[in-house]
Length: 107
Length: 171
Image (cartoon, rainbow over all chains, first blue to last red; front, side):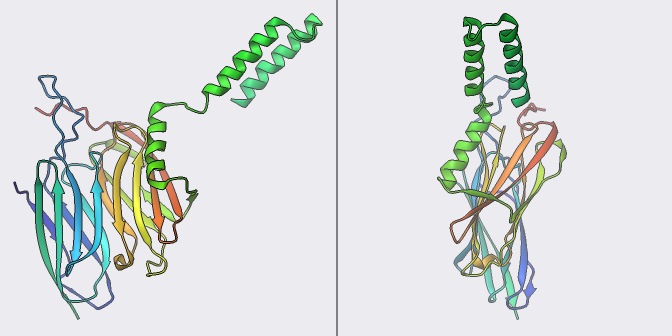
């Protein structure tokens, strides 16, 4: 199971600069509180977490609840310390797991 | 509530003076009714206690201070399905003094939790923004947990015109 993810990380940054990272992933985020036309509850299907690692070290993570809108969009900041990769892992219900990477050059 | 209570007390006193009796059975009943009313006051709504419980499960018995946190939500929301929300905490984000976590809670959604964010000194700036769902006109609270163990909060009242979770998914 895969989804479309968009990540916005600046390609270049100065050492020590605070950079802004934007992430967006396409996901229905079904709350589990809605009812379908047959009157049955639609089972919950959400992304439960997003973890961000900068060259393997965890720098940011969030836990999502059903109150997060569909297609979770998260913006946060980090300090550009060294060149390398920033990896984003989304995990969710029904074994959902997806990892995307972005490269950054720090001068 | 206080003025109303006073009004009732005032009425009871007037009646007592008129009847020239010290304590009547009627007064006892009025006093009992007032006491019962006061006892019922601290728990006005189930949803509120649900949020309180969720907050206490994260914060424990620690004191929640007002300030340092700024929760940015539009005051009037047309569509509760996607509400832009931003939380900024006033912190230098150094190793010694940084924000460990930001928790967001709501009052009237089916579940009181909205989001939990974990961050550290490497964030550089304690700021996070996302989009949330709101099922009703309600209060949203953001609580920041600092590295020194203190908790700071900010709340926002949001008026929602079209609630989330109600639309027919087949349309």
